[in-house]
Amino acid sequence: MQALTTRRQALTLLASGLLMPFASGRSAAAASLPSPLGKPILRVGGGVKIVNDGCDAVFDMDMLDALGTRSFATATPWTDGAPFWEGVPLSVLMEHLGAEGTAIRATALNDYVTELPMDGLAEDGAILAMRRNGRPMPVADKGPIFIMYPFDQREELKRQEVFSRCAWQLARLDVL
Image (cartoon, rainbow, N blue to C red; front, top):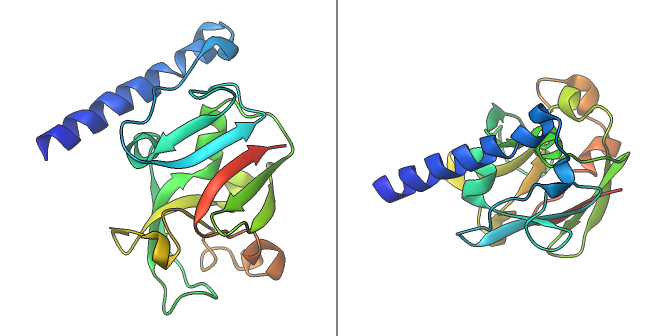
């Protein structure tokens, strides 16, 4: 357990250090992410400035956790009750990567593709949920990542246009 804590602390420090190019005025194009130490679960490409694999940013679960997580309970059309969801806010990930674009194309492991507008990400509260009711989600049960919105907190999100953005088994994001 201590090794995991130490690794998570190291990743948090690395993640924090990657923001320094923005604060110092240096070009973010020269910045890079550390390589994932665990199993990669997300690849982000397109209009991102911070990368670690060619033109893409590749993350394992610990790297995403190091960006900070948000949690909420909400009912969905795909689950019973109102599960408790936890994951990194999508707006935080995009800001961390220096993303520039107007939309995000999300692609799931089953080739489901949807688009999310970049505008309003923070206000809408979308997260890349990696845990449901405190447990990581296996691929067989909509994991490892599920784009989730706080539907019960914001009534205006309960519409088909937003439901269609909730890709489960998320594998890739591309900033357009």
